[in-house]
Amino acid sequence: MNALCLKNRSRIRGGRGGFTLIELLLVMVIIAILAAILVPKVVSHVGEAKITKAKADLSTLKTCLNTFALDNGQFPTTEQGLGALISNPGNMPKWEKTLDKDEIPLDPWEHPYIYRCPGSNGDDFDLSSAGPDGQPGTSDDIKPD
Image (cartoon, rainbow, N blue to C red; front, side):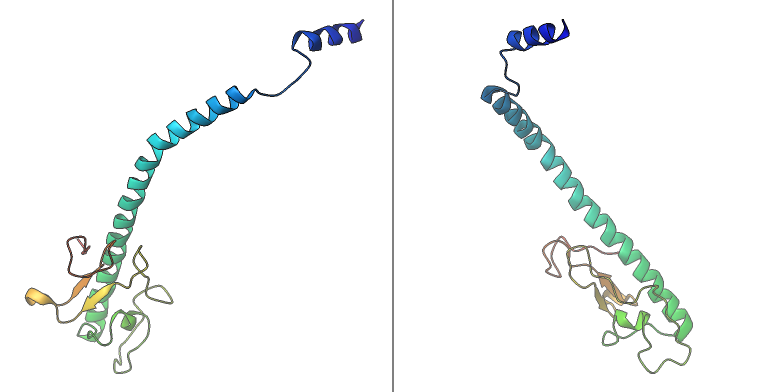
């Protein structure tokens, strides 16, 4: 008796499983519409996240530079660069590693952070990221807070 019921059910459905071409196309159109709406929102958040990371890195480097100056009585020169935070430039008897990394990080766009000492406008040093365009001195440069 059960076999007879199963046979009748498959006859009612047409005997074939799966989706029609129209159903598949409809699902693909819905997915494309959702992607068109959501992708720009996600991409804009990625750009904001990179800027936030660059500011956090710059803040950390600024703190390390100030610690370096307290320990050694001076900031690293432009020639010594940020590398002086992870390895002794050779003439610092009280030098201690102030950056807890093995190498100086790159900014989120894979460019080196820019360091100059002495800084412009009477500052002790200048520290920045060239930003998304990778060109220093443009409007998208990022500086520590």
